Image (tube, rainbow, N blue to C red; front, side, top):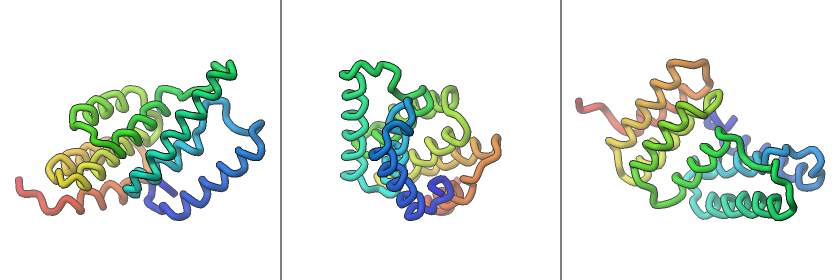
Length: 169
């Protein structure tokens, strides 16, 4: 739902998962607060910076508590770490260089459609910053990545490309 752009349904479902996991921690993944990370991804895509930052703090607190309790196996996989950093960049005064570095790492370490998502959220972030050409390049990269793997993100990426306006070159 999130990757296709159905954000309200995705957020509702994700909040329900978080609620269930909080009442039944025995069913929660041992790899960290994945459901909270998904909600942070949704809120970052929506452009809700304050809520995204709150969720980042919640994730960091959860991981710190796990470490202090000696649960060293709790943490993010390399692909989830990229998503966490993506959410962070999308909700702060990031630089283009940091985004480009994350794009490069995502090509190596991301799984499934995540590499598309990183480029797409970069474009969304750049567009919000008024960096139209940078956004166009990021959405073009997302489209190129999407062309190489089966995915459900084509419509979302195309909406981003269309939002940058007509090409002048």
